[in-house]
Amino acid sequence: MLALNDITELSRAERVLAWGEMARQVAHEIKNPLTPIRLGIQHLRRVQRDRPAALGAALGETSDRILAEIERLDTIARAFSRFAAPAGDATPPDRLDLGAVAAEVVQLYRLAGEGTEVVIEASAPAWGRARADEVKEVLVNLLENSRQAGARRTVVRVAERRITVLDDGRGIPEELLSRVFEPRFSTTTSGSGLGLAIVKRLVEGWGGTVEVESTEGRGTTVTIALV
Image 1 (cartoon, one colour):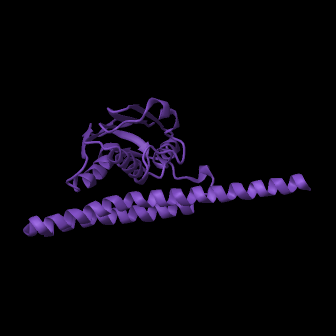
Image 2: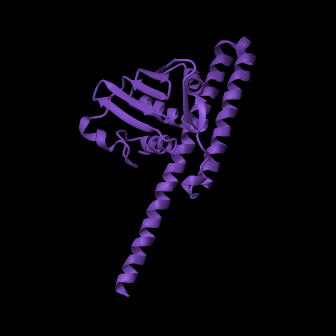
Image 3: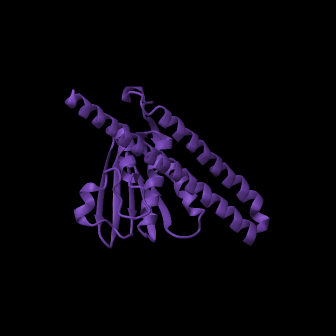
């Protein structure tokens, strides 16, 4: 009876920890689409202040992008509602033009007009199997990591079945590289520690792999290989 009680308490503690981790992950996933929305609003304010005659055109383009991010928030919410579904029930990855999807995310960061310079180098077309909304989520996670690492320039390089994100930020100490995919691991005080864990989970869900190379003080390279 004592052993049974111990197991029951352990099971309850594990469930509490699991729900706590889920709550952190939901908060992290929702935060990422909010960043491009904020950047879009800041862009509109700058246009209204500095180039009011161009506000109409900027409003049309930026509002479309903001609405797309709101749609992505809805997609994230629905994805978490299906979180307990068996893996076999997931929608099969689509054959995507990775360059086109990546260009949408890079354009959102360019609207900020400040901070990290983000550029894209893409062959056209660059096909790979993934889910478009999840590719955007992966790239936002990686670009946010670069920004938080103090990168001045980040390059998103897209080729057939491959996405590479390179930055010139602070980098990751060699002794910590083996832990970067662990949930709750972060090299910054503001990060939730779920960014690369989420990236790994999503990429492996497409049948792909992700690798991180980094030199402290020189920058980080994340390579995603798809099928």
